[in-house]
Image (cartoon, rainbow, N blue to C red; front, top):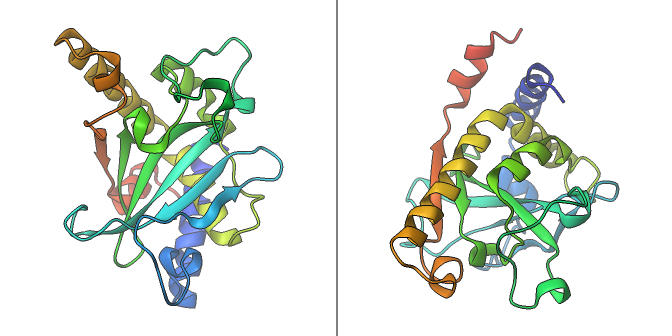
Length: 218
């Protein structure tokens, strides 16, 4: 999906959600008994064709920006990676890991259901197979969750957001790797570098109106 097509899908889905009065979080969370930290859906939304996936969750108050309601985590499945792609950090279970995924980014959503920030996390946060930024960047166009069993508007919105913000995500992933390199140069061992602390390594704030206007989308 090129950036103009992605912008049009984002406009369409945001407009649809507004007209229906059902923002993003209402489409992915139960009406009652929302549990902090839980994945929604509980086994993640998995695309039946590509195997890309997403889930949404809500952190406890005090453990999130007050402007944030919750956030999505977006992943490629490792089967979407080229055969010669090699992660530089992986789960302790290695090839027996339960989650066979590479994390693209987190997407923060405000209390009105509007995206407000992208963020890149450390390996332990999602227990991912962590690939170098150039590898992830070259695979971003493979992210597609249009065919998960979850809300179709949410699926289309997330697929389009990755395409629309490809450059910003790319820059953020490079910053993530630089932050890890800086920590390594400062003497952090692997167990400290990838497995504890430094949960958020890079952030890109989102101004969706400005982004759309910059493209002169009709």
